[in-house]
Length: 365
Image 1 (spheres, rainbow, N blue to C red):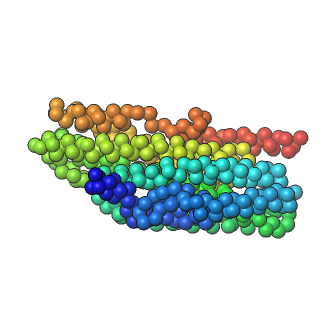
Image 2 (cartoon, rainbow, N blue to C red; image 1 turned 60 degrees about the vertical axis):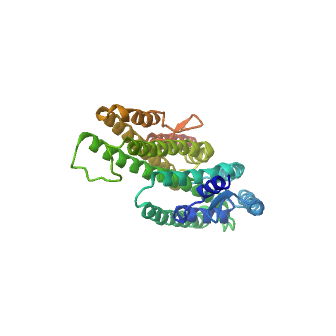
Image 3 (cartoon, rainbow, N blue to C red; image 1 turned 180 degrees about the vertical axis):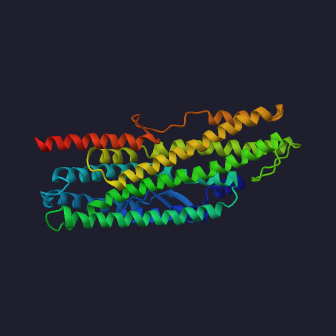
């Protein structure tokens, strides 16, 4: 009993190199009052009550800043952005991102469990060079976070110098909720990319299995050695593949059920208010990650189908198990309106262009 409890407890401990991937984003989220997962001593839990109080005061400051911005700050008459749409943009982002934050805090346990499941995928697959991969992701994470913060500061300066009629002291503060949403999307993108890398490793294992089944001696990919003479050994390898694929697909679905509201606010702000390049960039980033993972899964499905042609009767059952997992619908729908794929940025561009033309027509009347 005690041993089982200890094993279960140790399974929930996150590795340092795994946690490090998300540290840059978590740091910004902590300062902005939107960190809904606390990782301490290797354990992921929902945020503490003390931090929730801090977050409450931070968001009160955001709301007050937004009120001051809307009431006292005016845009210049010759600005490309009208005063009305500029304020509407910040009101929509500020208010809906508050809802996002509250929603994330309410799902704190689900978010913390997601980290444990991602770590489990890593341990089950036992990928070579996992530490190096995590280190590269940490470096990339740091760069993207720094760029996002710098962009927010530059945008606040541009607001004050070129768009607002006079100096607006809260111009930077009203950008922070938007930055908070950016951090949320970056976090989702990293989790997606983490799964992309793991599925790529699954594909390398399947390629090795295919080459061993066809007797191809030219294969140079050796993530594991297939032992055709030992069915128990082969079963263990296939179980690893099936469990890892199952866990990855499950986390893939859960990721978007938890963060379902994060995407539409960016789509809405781009399509209906201000065509900010940064917002579109993050939407494209999510679409690229979704396409990458779908491509890896489709490649896995094709490899399994090819392996099935050359497999013996004893191994066909294991191959079919994995193939059945990969046959499921992999498209991610946002509120049954938007599909997260390569077509979404083009659809958004078309909506934005149409909306801009309508505004210009009204301006010329």
